[in-house]
Image (cartoon, rainbow, N blue to C red; front, side):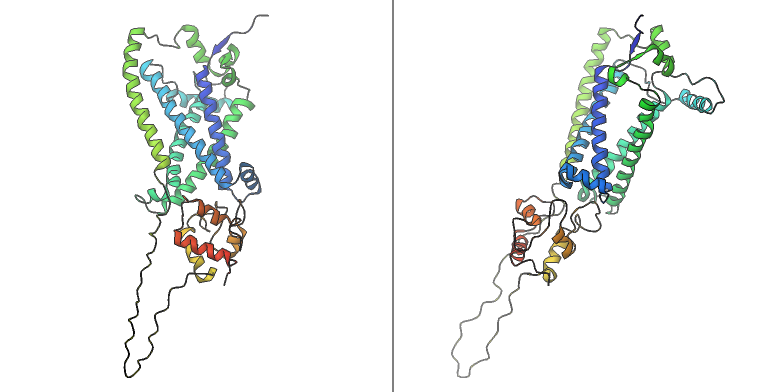
Amino acid sequence: MTEEKKYLRFPLPYRIEHWIFMLAFTTLGVTGLVQKYASNGISLSIIRFLGGIETTRTIHHTAAIILMLEVIYHLGVVSYRLFVRHDRPSMMPGWQDVKAAFQAFVFNIGFSKNPPQQGRYTFEEKLEYWAVVWGMVIMVITGFMMWNPIATTRFLPGEFIPAAKTAHGGEALLAVLAIILWHMYQVIVRHFNKSMFVGTMTEEEMLHDHPLELADIKAGLDKIPVSPKVLAHRNRIFFPVYGAFAILMLFAVYEFINMESTAIANRPAPENVQIYAPLTPTPLPTPLPTVTPPPQSVAPSTWEGGIAEIFQQKCAMCHGVQNPTASLNLTSYASILTGGVSGPGIVPGDLSSSQIYSKQTAGGHPGQLTPAELAIIKQWILLGAPEK
């Protein structure tokens, strides 16, 4: 029995790119949806397994960076095929795809006995590809706004931040469902397509899914020959242009990550200035009434006496009721004692076990307290963190 002839569909670089994209997408889907539905029991279990909400967000951001780098590489590969090798733009939709979609519809409902004849990429595959392109545009824009909220509000009203969060989460949910219900069905359930694993398809599989491409291969029309001299000339133009473009895109990714160094600008430390200096008393025949100096300001020592106001000013934006994804709520006395995923926020009398004090002492926190405010919080904890 002779082995059935096989045709190369996806070379190794194509497959590596696909699996990098798949791993980054899966990581983003898991770490993003558990934050969108943070109160769900499964989400809480996954967040604990990953090491807490901060670690989950770090993993999510890392996967986003990998995906952006993959997009830069993909743009270079596609540009090379189109502008250097002059390959057919086989992923571009056209009128033939509209007719193929209609033919598939009448075939699936039993009004036709013949399925559509399609080329290298079917209309279903083109829909998936351009849906990914559109989704990437949405996710990059809204992701930038959520990653850099203060920078965003320099140009747009603050209402755009929660709108971006809603759009980001909705597009993520749509993308995950599309992959599970559409892509996985087409590749695994409908018939197991191994080409992204082994790179090849049998002649029978090509006849079933891509008969027009098979006809082009047998006729020698699948690749446009390019002379080495012409190819070298095109390469000399392409690589400097794409190199400059890639550097510009990498700089954009760097700015995406580092544009916002802190969420809230720290207030300058208050100066200690003597505002009252009593004069040296001079003996007089008639004693004057004693002058009482004005009372000195007293640092807050209870939750209701001023501690709550400090947390409201510095922490409520990220750790309040308006941000349901935050595991730590610092807007009430009860919630600050309860804490979040990493443990209690404040432990009365115990600085080392108080997560808030430890985070603030380390420095570099988005809502970093001033040294004076941190000293007040320290004194309050050591006094037993009284409420009233």
